[in-house]
Amino acid sequence: MYPGMVNSPVTELAAAIDNAQTTIEVVDGAALPPAPNLATLGTSEDAETVLYTGINGNTLTGVTRGFQGTPKAWAAGTKVARLFTAYDHEAFRANIIDHEAMIEQNTSAAQQAQQTAQQVQQALGEHLNDIKQYMVFAKTVNQSIPSGGYHYPTFEAQQGQNEADFAEIDQTSGRVKFKKAGIYNVTAKIAFATNAIGVREVDLTNFNVVKVNAMSEEETIITVSGVIVVPSIDTLLELSVRQTSGSSLDVLGGSNYENYETVIFIGKVASL
Image (cartoon, rainbow, N blue to C red; front, side):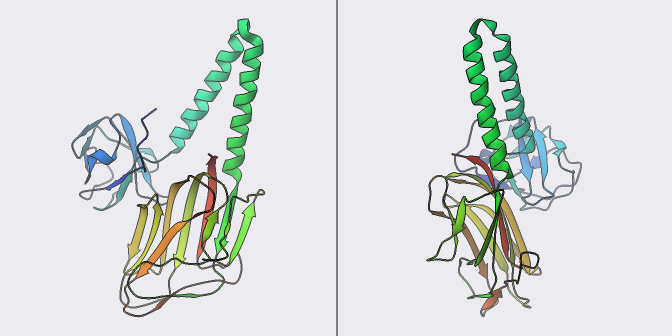
């Protein structure tokens, strides 16, 4: 296991790369853990996880492309971070399975082994149940966003799957508020009204550090996705938007769960 890094720091590609490059320059190599290790390029569903065997200053060397995901060309400024990956989850799972096997072989402590196995099984079951739980928060009305500065989009509708109830809409601010501490996977799609000029930006923040940032001068729909840690109850989701059109611009709502323009999907990864 790699040592944890406070706030899961994020760096960026210092220069564009193609789909076969095995030496990668980043802006801040200190944001990544020591080699050998994994790094994820990009923040959306088409992200690419690579394996690097060396790190020299801000240079990743001995890179295996497409360790998970498809190798592709990436532009300078692409976010790079040591995120929690499917590989990590399977490693946890394999460790638990190996641990159970060792307990079964310990015939001299059968009673203790049985109790430990039950505890491990219960923890695994709770973790798998957490993964299946997700909630959807959506806008049903348009919201006018002033030009310049960061503003919080508000939400009017919520829906939980598999009895999920870990978050709700805060009645005072209209923002998403967590009712339970835990680790959550957040994906937000923010739809702006069409406008000819200016930048549209969405930030997902955790512990006052921007974890995911996306902006565009052409696209009206901006999507961000990232894993956040919620340390305590009544924590508000730090999702903010900004636009620089020079006048107010709407964030769009929708009429039903199939047609919502602006929506947040929150999946529970684990409890704390």
